[in-house]
Length: 440
Image (cartoon, rainbow, N blue to C red; front, top):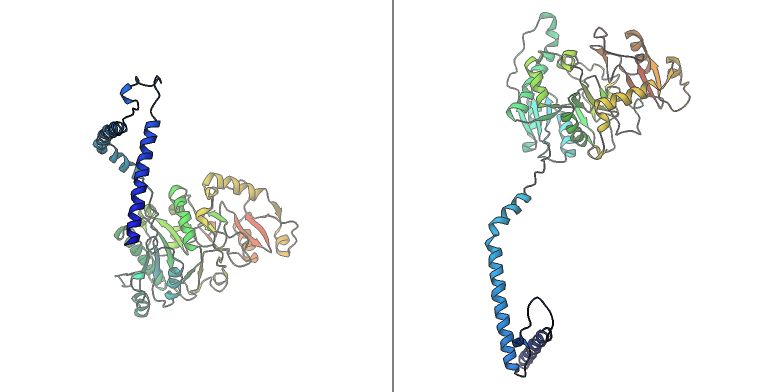
């Protein structure tokens, strides 16, 4: 009780002192007689000996001022309808949504598709931005069970037409290639037309991806969209065997006239161009024909972002034991989305690339093969015919086949690779103008 009474006494004393202090400050703040201001001095406002009267006049002044402030506040509030929409308009800033880039896994009868899916799910940065769609052909029950075990983590599509395709007698052994081409057409139509996506990255069920696989494609998506001289982005280097690439340049990218496949990005606009004339078989070699490529290039890396582990398949392991199983898979994460990739634009790239190639010192095949190169390089090894290209390529350990005259990884006829720690350009003579489709 005593504590409560003490508190009340202290509060009362504090309020009394504060009120009188306010009054004194107000009275002191009045202008002295004769002071020039905005208005004339009011003698009635001068302090008198009547303290009570002065207090009443001050109170009246406070009340009058409060009335004025209330009127001003009312006027401000009456204009609220004018400034609220402006605030809302400023709040509507159009921030572009990040693109959704689905991953299409083309599957058939490999239960090892689990290895491919596990790695994709492990590395995927966002389920919303990278939905995984598995399109299965063949009707293989064990593979279907593996895919179904992932539940809603993946979308499982099943090719409805599993029938044999009528082919010429001499092509009967290629029935599998016909079915693959049919499946690709159906699966891509599902992605672009049924599911309405605007782009897709296509991998097969025997591919393992690198740690920066998703980062790579996200960074190159706007490059592909904005450059009409490009028609795909690939994660694959056909000559990317360990020892044939520069391990110190995992961020290095190239333009190539050769369609690489094996983990590649396609836009809906390009599919709408290709789909009406899609081939009945051998779709990848068809993509490499001049009629489809139309002078366009793909982007590919120095070090592959995919690795194939499927030796058995329709191709019966073609190239697998000699080349594919030795491809180096990138292990270092490269922040591609933070890099300036403007150097990949056609005009700038062509000028820079030609300068690098044709200013390099010319060497002979024997110099390269025997390791008789002095200096860090790069070096240019020149070929002049189909046969000279194939002989040198084969003996140096790079892929020697050509499709419609284009060598694997080639850009303007030049194949770049590493050999004994030095950069080598296997190149045609200066003044190259076009590929010869008979070189196949």
